[in-house]
Each structure stands twice: as C-alpha cells, then as structure tokens.
Length: 92
Image (cartoon, rainbow, N blue to C red):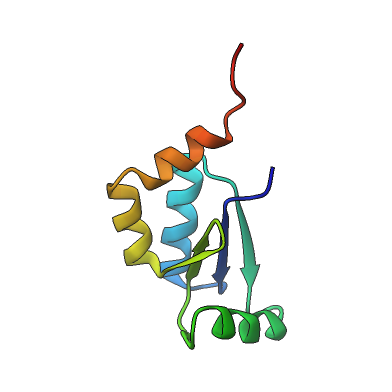
C-alpha cells in the first residue's frame, strides 16, 4: 500500500511540526520530505503545488491539499480519520 500523505516540511518550522503532529496523532502514514536538507525537493514542492513556497505543503493521495490550515480543515471534515481507517487491515 502506498503512503497516503506526502508532506514537504522544514526543520524548525512550527507549522510543519503542527502538521506532522496531527498526522501522527491520527495514525496516518506519511512521507516527510525536508526541503532544507534536499534543495531539489524544494523545487519539486514548488512545481507540484503550483508555486507555493511556504511549508508545509501537503498532498493527500497525490492531490495538493495546501498547508497546515487546510490539513486541519480536512481533519475536521473527517478526512484523516478516513485515511487512517483505510490503512487498517480488514478483519475477516
């Protein structure tokens, strides 16, 4: 199964930390890409997010969601709970 969330972050960024904390708390798997460690990832983030340069930039199942505010709004609508539930193995 692929990881449902890709998140571009920077060390020391409070918004990145909030987003990562929420994802972990909800039990959603994610791939965190640190743009301050890998400058090419920053270029990829800007291209994929249609020019956004702030962190975090969050992609859910390949779709650009936005930043931390959009992640919290997605969670408030039950989106993260749904992702976490989809990751759980089905019981027979």
